Image 1 (tube, one colour):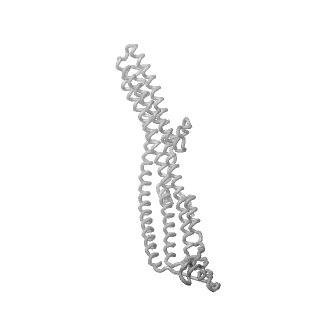
Image 2 (spheres, rainbow, N blue to C red):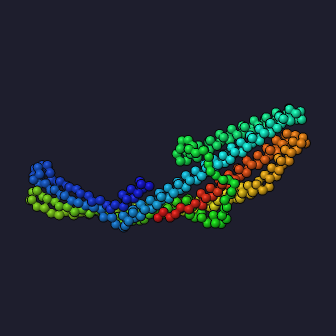
Image 3 (spheres, rainbow, N blue to C red):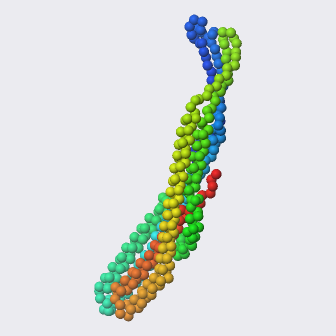
Length: 366
């Protein structure tokens, strides 16, 4: 931003004055030898800019500052989006660790219970081996969950420049899913999304360059005024000169045509981006609805039934009617559904962040 601002201030300056001197008829031959016949001219000149060129340059500088400010706003949104996504990943990994710990506790408790039944000769030794395998699998998943959590925490800490995590846990609640506005309301925000806003700012910048091109069609006048001294007579006189370049209009027409082509390209890209953004928003909106439906189905229908199935199977196992494998399968189904609930909730939050990013609003920078 500082570089753009300094460039804008430089371009807004008026044309500089030019001071010069001419020495003629010096160190020649014959009557022009030495400096007796010298003619010395001191002059000051300046380019007189016509057609509003300075005003056009100032307008271009302002447009470029606004464009840079808009780009910085997009960069901040990208960083916020990335950090939020990493926070969600850390929260999910933390939930997975908690569930893995609970799974280990259940598997260890079940293994001890099976060992008692095997020792009492009610169950075969194969049940104990199966229980030990279930415990080992639960401990392995717990170890993997811990490693995943460490990686997620490290990525989150890197978002603010920390080499190692400077926190123990993340404070997040994935149980409550925030509401989502209707699609029409969200789609109504698209014209002021970061990409569309940047397109508007880029259009303003190109339009400012076009005004400079139009102004350059009117040639500038180079005027100078000076004093000439003739050593031969000791007289002095004023000297005035001016010059006017030719062919400025033709050169300017090419620059105007270039700016018009750039404007058309930006407009076409903005239209294509708008259509793509709407489609992306619709896709994510649909996926969010699916994720919410899945979470609600898991919480209200599937998990209660799975919990009831575990309770019934455990009572049957304790009464000797069900095998350990039936109990292990019921518990596995329960824990798998809990993991599925976490993933569905995390998917909802991740999509919510993407929707907020797509429909984010950047205030007018002008």
